[in-house]
Image 1: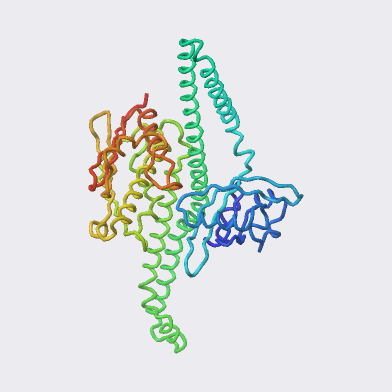
Image 2: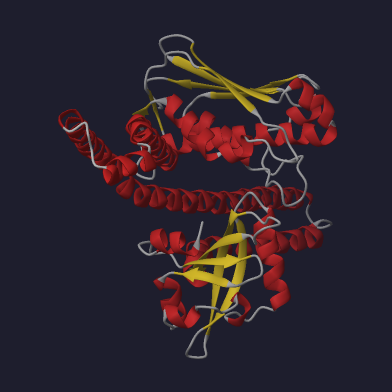
Length: 452
């Protein structure tokens, strides 16, 4: 993405957005950023990011390097120096738009948000957690003081302490889930905004291609009529005909218009997939095509399926049955598909790191199958041919905060949240089947008609 392309779609978005290089140079900004700083956009041109913040240049470079090397959105904190001398603490969300290469620097998109506003929804929850933590501490002190005096009271205090600890754990889990939900919401809003801005010019181009092709054919037919009635053309015209290779031009221009039509149709398909994935207006129960949700999720993850210098291409095999529309929460179900497919890709990449030669020969694959069990239920199966999961790990797979990934690579909430969505929200079943060395299969079973 060039700075000009960034400004084109960022201009209409309300979020403060910056496009920076991996070295911290401001390549482009939109008006909300300038308003936040109390400056004009012209005053920001050519500046470095660390000129506008209180953090050290070293810390800024480290944060941008983390954004450049991550395939996920990287959360950070930046303290802006406003034009009036005051400072503003902002939460930043960084995502790499163009990875670093030997020919060009990385391009990083930063989304800023006033930290006071962003955290206001969690203040009450955090205060409650602090109160409960203090209460737990007081109860433990009371337990120690009254232990010798009254055995019955000791038991009551212990039970109460346990209950409070469980409540504290539940609230902490809820807090983490809210943060995850906010990240998904931010991603959905950005995806939907970009899809909307792309769709308008593409629709204009697609709508005019037909007319442009017709007008061109009319002109070419006119040229052919001239050739029929005036076969002996002057040398100047004949020279120009040979120069532009008129016969080839007539033959090739139809192919040219067809390729442009195919290209615009592909962009329209991508926009449709982006909208299907975000589904911001479909938080309630709705009848949807499950295959559209899977396909849109695969489109979002397409860059991770392609071959790189580190990993071979991951082939996706679809064995779709004819499914009826399913009554569900579309955006939440797409989140489940995202979590499971991302885990399958992670598993195949881990297998590649362990034994690249073996995986290259076996060809990494993800198999997606859908099936109607009976009049009430459907099944979606997602399987990979990675290293598989042993029984000890499989028994804890849906526990909150359980992860086998390295620190910073996973929260241990993806499959837990997926389990809650399928089992509690949709009254379905989520199961895992795996044999070590032969891959893993996640099976989603949900009702067709109702979630009650």
